[in-house]
Image (cartoon, rainbow, N blue to C red; front, side, top):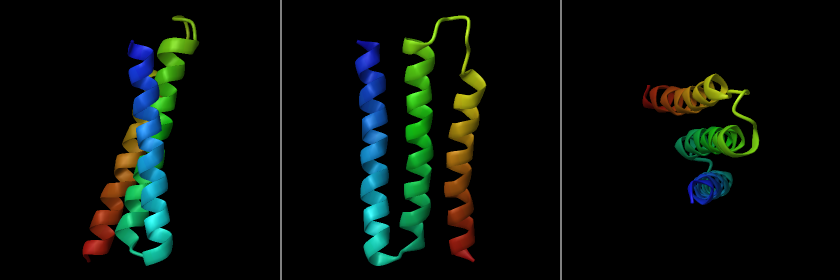
Length: 86
């Protein structure tokens, strides 16, 4: 059951990223761009979670790459929010 949740979370993040980036392409609103890029990173983080916990053996740990990917994606959104506010 957990595997299905991991896949659904990854698919939801991909869907959000696609919708946000499509909206950015038509409106050129930079906040949509930063949000879309954040969701791309979150989708990568969710895929890494699935690969780490389901596909790879327990001897290989992708904990740090998952955390760094999530940190980078949220940092992109934070940078965009700060940059667009000024």
